Image (tube, rainbow, N blue to C red):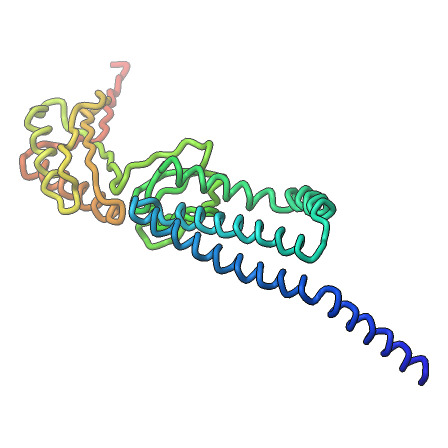
Length: 273
């Protein structure tokens, strides 16, 4: 029992000595940290307002504001530790060692953040653009520092890590995608008339952009003259417009009396007689 009382007394003396010797340093450190939080938040809000007036990208300005806030807090934390008499040099060395070890564990996420920053700074694409990358195509719905989210026409959401976008070849067709179609006409048909009919058919479809449709001869097949047509359509109505275009071209050629041939093979039977 006496040993327990002695232990409690020792702990009590340690607490009292710490309070007497370091109470003012501890109070000063706490006040410094509180000031750091207040000033850091004020700096972040100031940066956000300044960048908002300059129409800086939302993700980028939030990243810059958060980074500035963390830098301010870091400086005030160093001041608070100095206020308590704690040496900074050993702490910095320990943090450096931990950072080296942690860098291997977070290499993937960090590379995503770096790639996301490059995307935002270079404005490779914006929200609302239509891009094709890594075999995935869709409308850009969101760009964060880690990922880019696409939305396909069927509503499917595609999440692509940014490190798989930077350094790769990607196609950006803004808000539209191109439809490429082809149909054949008989060699006996009037080519100029067929091109005019196809151009009129594809231009009258709802959802086709105001850009003039590209219509012309692509190749000469065994049984037909192959005519291509290319039009720009809204990404969110790609397949709907594609089906309407093909139907309109087929119907317009039929109404104009222009035949769409099918492969034919002539067979001759030779007899000994």
